[in-house]
Length: 415
Image 1 (cartoon, rainbow, N blue to C red):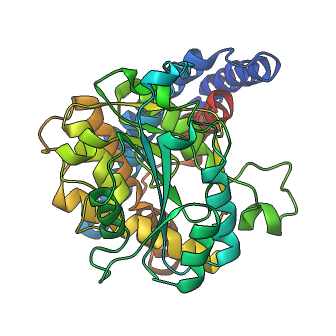
Image 2: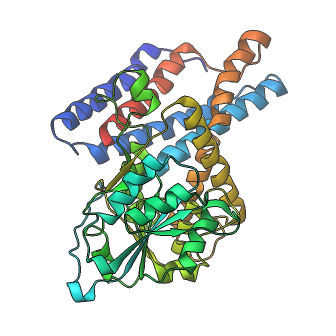
Image 3: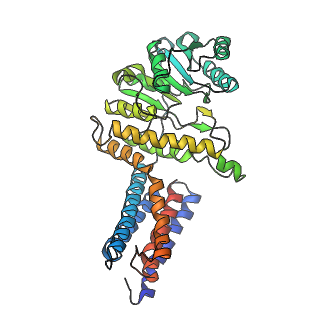
C-alpha cells in the first residue's frame, strides 16, 4: 500500500502519542486517571489497524504469500481478542468489601485441608503452624494434613501441632483424589484448601468466613502471594523493583474477573462451602488442573464466588527456570484438558461472560504457537522471500506505530 503525501498523515500517530503520553503521566500522579479513556482509544486504534491489515496488506501475487499473510493476520486478530478480554475485565477497578464474621454462636465449622506428597517437613511445619494459628474458636476448626506420601515424620509433625494426619491406600487421581479422600472423612461446613507451602495469616478465617452468610456463595478465592523472589526478580537483582510475575493474574486479573463471577479457583488460599463442592461431586478428577475444573463446575452450578484482594496467605514461588517451566507445562496441559472435558462454551449454567473469559484463559496457553508464527514470518521473508505483509514503511509508521504505542501505554495506565 503506497501512500502519497504520507508526511501529513503522520499527524495521526503523533496525536495518539501525545494523548496517550498525557494520560500515562496523569495516571502516575493520580491512579485511575484516564483509565477508561485509554482503553477506548486503544480499542479504536487497534480496530483501525486491523481494518487496514484486512483491506490493504494481504499479498495476492502468490498463494504461499497469501497463505502466510492470512496466518499472520489471524494471529493478530486473536491477539486483539485476548486484549479485548483484558480491557473488559479491567474496565472498572475491583472494589473489595469487608464482611464481619457472624456471632460466635453462629460460626460454622471449618476443615482445613493441607495437600502434601513429598514436600520437605520443614516446609510443612510452617504451613501447619500457620493453619493451627488462625484466629477462630479452637473447637470450630480442624486441620487435616492430607499426606499422600504416608510418611511417619509427617504423622509425627501433625500430632505435634494437634492436626489430623490422613493417608489413603492408593494415589488415584493425584491431588484431587487426596482432597476428595479428606472431604469424605470430614464434616465441616466450610473447607479451606492450602498447598503444602502456603502459610495462612492469623486473620485468614476472619477475612473469609463471614462472606458465607450468603447461602448462594460457593467459594472465596484469595490471591497466591510469595515471600521469595521468582527467577526473574532474583536473576535481575530486582526483587524490590519488579513485582512477582504471577501478580498480574493472581491480583489484577482475578479481581477484574470477580465482576463477572468468573474468578478461577487456583488450588490454594481458597474456602469452599461443603454443599457447593458436594453438588458437583467433590474436587474434579480426570484432569491435571483439578482446581480450574472444580471452580468452573461450581460456577456452572449457579453458585456465586468472591475474591479477597488482600494477602492472607503466602508461599514459595518456583526458584529456578526448570521448576517454573515444569509448573507452566502442567498449567498449560491442564487448562487444555479441562476445556476438552468441560468445554466452557457448552457447559450448562455459565453466563456469556463466564464462557468468554474461561475460553480466553484456554486460548492464552497457545501463546507459544502465536509467538512462533511472529518469529518465523520474518525468517521466511529473509531466507525464502515469502512476503506476509504487502505494505510500505510509510504505511507502517501511520497504522502500526500508533497501535504499538497505544498497547504499551494503555497497559501501563490500567495496571
